[in-house]
Image (cartoon, rainbow, N blue to C red):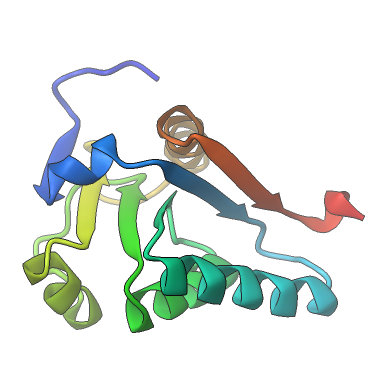
Length: 137
């Protein structure tokens, strides 16, 4: 990814120095895979691991919810400009230093192009990737 000045950070940038799990979950996956992802997220949260993702698909949002319930650390990579108002569920983890939000684009809305660039950035940041899609079968 082109590391231009358009990248913006909000939160604990020290999380970039942690060992990071990357997570990308397709919008459509088999139902038995959903439960496996929830178990994986619960394990990451219990261990206090750091997970980096766009947390954009419904599955990714569910994984984020499990991570935030535990003591997991998260790096949210946006495929759009930084939020003007931070979602309420994110405010406490930000205050606790368990979250970093990275905006990788200046667009006001995510597009296919910015989402693909975001996913490449997630892969670049991650030490280990966990990708789940229909193609995994």
